[in-house]
Image (cartoon, rainbow, N blue to C red; front, side, top):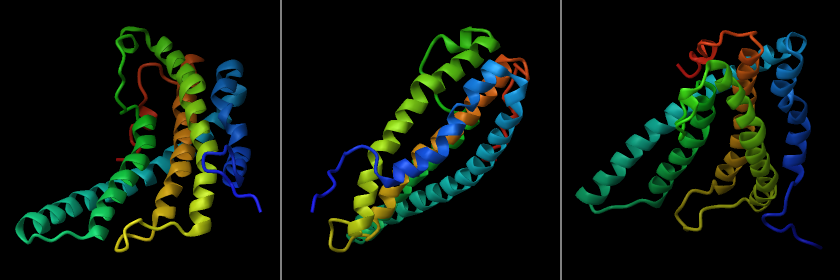
Length: 220
């Protein structure tokens, strides 16, 4: 019986998710090309993505609280009582990973992410919209699709063997933690569709050029 190789592309998880997502990934580009006939669908997608981002933002906040209190407890136990617990240490690691991964879509959809460039702020609002749309099509979407494609077999194998911590007293939930990879890819794609969708609407003059106010309430 042949065994699936780690790192092999696709896998059942990725195929199913890609099949469901693929029609929506083209919505921002279709909006930029055809305008109002597609804009109604794009606005619905924006609303769905923003609602999901709101939930993710709240989940990320809980993770950050767990991270803060877990880290404080770890430090106190180690330096005052000389004790260290693997499960507590791994809980902090889980909270850090999940908090980061689930907060990223919210940061993108609310335009709160860090931009490492010197051009974006110097151009017109319409050009910014075009750059946002282009960035999604050429950078964000391909990278997230690759992550989804290549994480599929890894997650499938982790679930099949019920992967646990390599430490005997660690958490038995490594397979759940690895599941965050495709979830992150999917939610980033959804946030990207909304972010690029707003950009397409602004570029077509169907949404106010001067702000992203429609998305700023997300995560609040």
